[in-house]
Length: 167
Image (cartoon, rainbow, N blue to C red):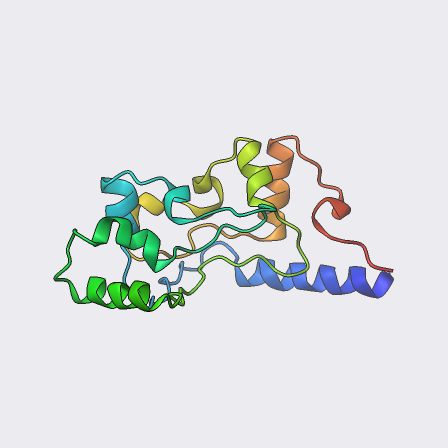
């Protein structure tokens, strides 16, 4: 048990050091098909859950299937090389291998559904997505940030709330 706590503390310190203020936010990763959040979310006002499903049990928000994109793009911008590529994904029923921008460590329990039901917004954890052409990390989702948010919202900061205790 003490060893596990020491490992968690070391991981926390390294995470905080790597994400300390003053460091520039890195550019987002290149995606297999370019997607402009600024246009889709900012200009067109699409809601996050239109493209990012939250299947049961609700921990993860999914990444969009090509078929979801094709609901609009079967008739919008069809001459674009990127949309042609997306059309091929949809026709062959192959998943688009989107590169995750945010990823929750495996040792942390996090439920998107529970946070949404508690009236948290996507922007609180993901930043102003509507202003980004290329999605990048705008918010440091580290233990300190999560605990600060929990304190502000009067949510539990007990270790077992987010971390499973193993014997």
